[in-house]
Picture (cartoon, rainbow, N blue to C red):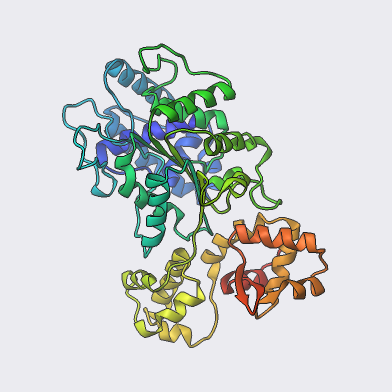
Length: 475
């Protein structure tokens, strides 16, 4: 079992028994212990204390012990999970058995699945088999504010127009993951397989291909025969062969695959959309899915779209791109949940933080804790408050910019109003080519705002980004 299989296997076992998924810290502990790391190292990489990690780990081992009906400890984790996996496969090999987070129990009664994560099938065609879901990597579904238009656009592109590749991009916290989870609820009955994979830990392409092939081919763990048309085939070892087999499955089946946190395989210090050297071969997967004929769809959630998206996208193309913006008045639901007061002032707050749901949740918490929910009192100070938590969400996005982009975003942040390309060329010490490249890349990262005024294009950065850049050395 590789690391990703371990995380998925343990999460599926816990979910089947309890209806709850492992959280990020629990997964980090599993990953670290599997790889022989000490609690101190796990604590350092997870940005928390060693004592906290030990406490969570103790509770995790108890939970796994209850799920597996045998004692699980830090020292026997690997042997226990490997033994249990072999047992499950041996008991179910040859049966119609789907190992995913929907049904992993061999009992006659399926485990209870929370309503917000339950599979649905088409009510108009009861002869269709149920959709097979593998959402073990997916986070819990959360509130989605006013994304009716975006959901409709994606549903039309994927279900009616049969697009093969779609990228959802936008700043951290804008709602890409939540939108994708709600989209699954709406359209999953149109697919035979729905698979969610996170690229948060930058898995190599061969691992991602292997995981997809195993699930679509009803193969778990690797290397028993793949049951397709009676033929016996072992899992290929080379990337070209695995890619070829995956494409075969995507042609034979209607599959919806969501890859989350795609920005982790993209490179820092370069213009938007370029890959890290060790992840460069993901471009082969994305290009082949976008350019060849098949019956499936791949959705990419990312801070910025990979370069293949910008090259291949189009209204008549099987490749589509959706750049998420902030939400409007519907953000008031966030404030209601936080019990904020003075609703007549909420619009000012939404506009200042550009309707970013995460930013609004952070500032709403501040207002609740310091001003007991009184928004009007907070706004009296006529300042844009970031705080450490909000700044921490911006830091990795600003820090990954190229030197050209850092220079340009510093220049834009010094301007109180929007500026034209002509004004930027006069003062930014950049050639037209450099300026165009920088503006285009910042736009793809959702870090510049563009407006038309009297037949002239004007550029600016939003107030939150401007405040961050002015308060923190960039470059």
